[in-house]
Length: 283
Image (tube, rainbow, N blue to C red; front, side, top):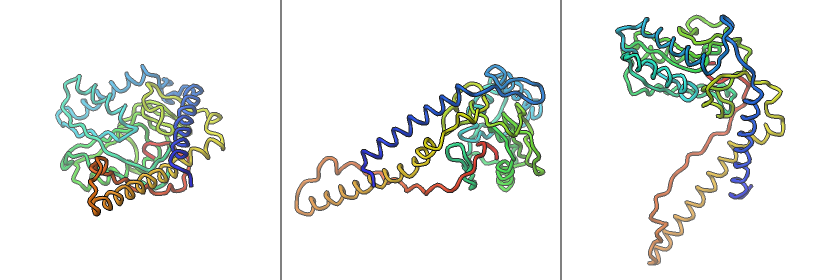
């Protein structure tokens, strides 16, 4: 087993590798175009389209004061910009956020968890869920069902990017900013690769030739295990320090100042499950 210093060195190496890969993917990314109107998903076009989506909400629900729920983390840039546009127009709405998780490092683990702890009761409310991309729509379908169980009057999805494809009934977004091919692997403006590139101002398509090679992938795949090992080492050190303090107190030795500092219990991370490549967002 590696020492603490060796683990920290490996994690630093992985962090730098992620930055290199993200910069490489972004530099070699290619423009993405809406298949209906040919517009690129550029900074200017994204800004203008979000403004138009704000107008669509106002027109559809002029007196409703809907509950607008941004999906963390990918949907934040889109949701925040949309909230600003609505606020500038003096529109009344309640903003909230929710968490879904089924991805690690840009790939799907297959297990979906949804946290609807919006702190605003959705009973008899019009709920509009806001996210970056809609793929198969299965995540949205589950979220819709959960809100409906909590008494929502109606639930809709607004997605910045709709990957056009056949979907089951009830899995289609009500509002969408852009429509693109389902084959596109996109990054930027909320859409990440290994948690990088979310804060860029436009959306690009990934050139798969610049994805991690097998050696890089092997190192990236060690990150979770290394973090688990590091946390185990820290926890053992805390237990040993606590035991030493107890012995000192038993024999009348004053406790050191460090023993007065509360310890932090760090939860164990579960081992990652098998993954298959799939675009993050509503899959």
